[in-house]
Image (cartoon, rainbow, N blue to C red; front, top):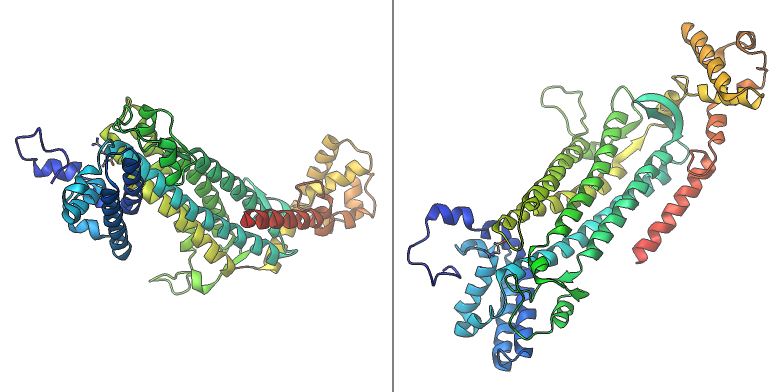
Length: 462
Ligand code: ARG
């Protein structure tokens, strides 16, 4: 039975009910609704609305309900209640009789749903955080295992300058570090409790809302009732954090897909994380990374959807807000699952060192080193760039690498070039030169890895 039948004389149209009801998805908030109800019952006792005995009965009834949900989270779906709040109350009434009807004194589904969703979000954010840490650990492990492996670095997807594979992995570590910061910021900002704000104007029950807040693990009570029942900022913040984190995951996936292609061949996918083709027997496909890239689109869509739901809403609660849930539930699930999948598959990705090195030496990746060499001989960089470019032209016409040109050929372009150009053009020399902070020189990358590992240990230690 609906919670609001008194002033109605006609039955509800089934088409309206189907459209209006939310139990089919908000049943996921059952434990949170029960937790909020237990805290509210305590508040009612303190306010003198219910007796000790009634409070104990409500507490027992709600504890039993929590256990029943633990055993079967889909239990509410066996009923036709309007939403999870109605379900909890009707279950309690069926069990306890009229005392259960006192539970909704001074509260509204508006402050209740706002509280439930915050509790659920806080819990899920904790799981996302764990998965993000697992992804970070896997990336650090990957960087560690890559040791000195060198591969081409790209700009415009054209070979640019060689980089350590570990340097590439650590770039994503930096992105995920920021993602963790954004997640923690969002969780810290949502730490206020809407319960006790009633439908919109505050509750008539004489209740200490800060005690209520701390009962539910919040640091404080929300300060404005109109805001509290209609604030969904935290959903937007977390959706935006998820979107950015997934975008990083998607870029990583795109890199890996290309690195695993026949054209690049830098990385190899283990059988355990690859799929084949039903038609082409030779195929080994990076489906898992494609799915990670695809899930990103889905998460980004949910961010846009929640922004659109909120943008035109007057204060305070509007039913539009019921549309905040399905997308956000899916977003949190997709985000958490994707991070965990990344953590799981990375150990099955191996680096083909020979192929990486071969590719890093091709494509005139040492042309900048040649220009730098000329600079070291006193030539202004702009002229050195020009000379190195001319030498690339000479070499490419003969389909040779720069270091295969004779000294004579080089000196025709610049008399400043002497024998010591050859050691300057090796891969090692080029890499070693990029030794300023943040660069790909071996020492810098080793230091960056050590720093990232100690940062990680501190974060894990809390
Ligand atoms: N199912 C509703 C939601 O998710 C609960 C709040 C209903 N409040 C109301 N005044 N109709 O938003």
